[in-house]
Image (tube, rainbow, N blue to C red; front, side):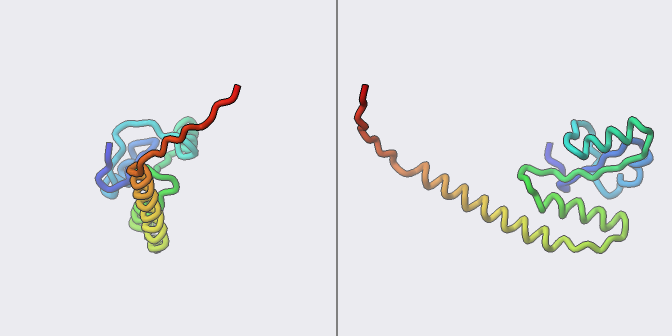
Length: 121
């Protein structure tokens, strides 16, 4: 499932969802793993209200996903954290990935040399 904004929101209670509903797409279903999943689960088990913003990512690290989440946090809490360094990192990573993909494509187009290697027994 692709998220329209690149991020989604989750919460342990409906009250938490109401706080973020107008800022993000609520994750309709799915499994949250890692530290985010652990923290949310522990909060739910212990009756604590917890809200999470989850950046959609296909790469790790993914500064673009972090920038999307930070944008929402800036809006929700009045933070003034610049996302410019994250966008610069994302651009660099994406350029590197594109360059690697082009190198792989060129390598795949090269004829394979078949050498006859001697065998010993």
